[in-house]
Length: 121
Image 1 (cartoon, one colour):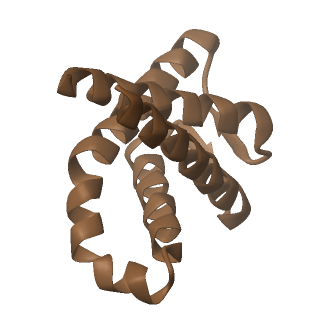
Image 2: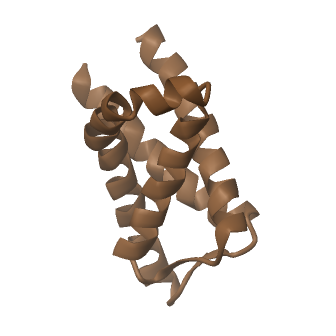
């Protein structure tokens, strides 16, 4: 059961970066096609692992800030996670706050749908 949820988070991480590269100007991957696929896959896997293992701890620690901002701080946490992944993978290029913002929106939407899928299973 838990492995399904972990794989769901990894799939959402990969899908987030794939959709961001397709639709968000300023998000790209340097290199040829083969290296781009590797970077996309591994960045998505790391994002999925961070969402599965680290994000619940961060949510617990930042619960008061999330309550005070009516949940908006959760969006900031997503943006910071994406920025962290961008730093870890130098070939993944997210140029500026605008692409970071829209990639954060993508991950929020995909995580919302994932939480609905988790409740169904």
